[in-house]
Amino acid sequence: MTATGVPLRPGTQPEPPEQHADTGQTGRGGDIVVTVRSVDRIFSLGMYLACSALGRSPLPLMEASAVSGGHRAPPTDMTIKQQLRIPGPTPIPMRVSRAATRPMINPRGPEFAALLEQCVTGLRSVLQTQNEILLFGASGTGGLEATVANLLSPGERVLFCTNGWFSELWSRMAAAFRADVVRLSAPWGQAVDVEEIERVLAADARISKVFVTHNETSTGVLNDMAAIAEVVKAAGCLLAVDSVSGVPCHALPIDELGLDVVVTASQKGWLAPPGLTMIAVSDAAIRAATEAKCPRWYFDFLRQKSCQGQGFMQSTPPLSVMYALQEGLAMIRDEGFAEMWQRHERLGQMARLGLQAAGLELVARSDLVSNSVTAIHSPFSSPQDLACFLTDLRTQYGLVLANGLGMMEGKAFRVGHLGSIHEDDVDAMLASLTAALTAFSRRVGVHLKREPSRHLRQRTTFQRNRGPAGQAA
Ligand SMILES: Cc1ncc(COP(=O)(O)O)c(C=O)c1O
Image (cartoon, rainbow, N blue to C red):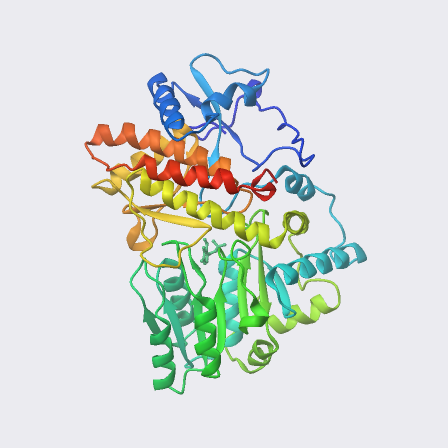
């Protein structure tokens, strides 16, 4: 694609990505190449200086000639790698992209049964559970709807802990299914108060199911699932968790914590494209599904469980996404679970420190912060300025970030650092962002208080601690 959204002209298609000597894989994050027209050379210079200040090389713009190979763009065009740094969909490694193009198979045949078995087994080990893993062709929202429809009955009183856009939406979904929703809301940017959950459950014996969002993608706040599980289990309630963007980037030992339902989705940290929701369901949740009265068909846990038990899915499965997931799981296993969690921890810290060093303020006010996404308050006075800034980032630097959501739309923006993302990617993101911020702030008259030395000190520590897990996957 070009920066203006039109496909690349035939002569500007990128060469296949280079071979990595260490892994033997091609490409890195499945980054695509964009052509930026009429780039102001001053931006290039600014970015170069910013990168130098951050101790960073090479620049995305400097990579341009390498990426465009023999198909060098005309002088008025600059070809750069697009850095997709939204909190999902995430870049797909080449190894996964290739897997996704495997030939179609009979979804009721033995090859599919083997594929299903491998996906389920791989998911069980990352999620540290022996629970049923149900798969549905859907995005994460489908998994959340399936959970509501299978656990609840109309009129049933349930507790939804909300602290951002996605948890709020999930509670609205339950209300649409006619559940009697009690909301325990924490201010956006803060984690759910565990003592409050305990108090609400103690005060209302009618509540027997609790719904929590593990990683609030709208604010970059992580909820303390161990502490929450302890109070919810002590009260004898079922606990359903939206971990669409939480796992596999953060460790979540489902069986140890006694989580009854955990929902995730292929396009987040699983190195796969969108199209599959994966739900870990405990025996207690399966029993609840047999009693729940909310209507459901496509998303019926019991029917899907029965089909999967026979080696197929109740309707046509998204085969290409499942091939990709199978390969993504193999890559996660190759990296090592602990290494993957540590890498995300390093990336989260790098992003937070780098963004703060650039003079930006994080939305998360909690001690518990997400290692997959960081939300930042807009430094600009109007949503229009933020929109222009995000457009500049995309069109002039090839850096794609996400706007804020819900009441934070136009007031915050979000950076994803999950999946096939490594230290160099976060460095490049910070370099582009810092350079763009300098130019844009000057234009709109915003003064940012910078602390580059803090970021550089931290960067040196990261470089010192960096092991093979931080290298290209
Ligand atoms: C925490 C959380 N819940 C739910 C969703 C919705 O998932 P999807 O967009 O895959 O339907 C998202 C998507 O970003 C999310 O981050």
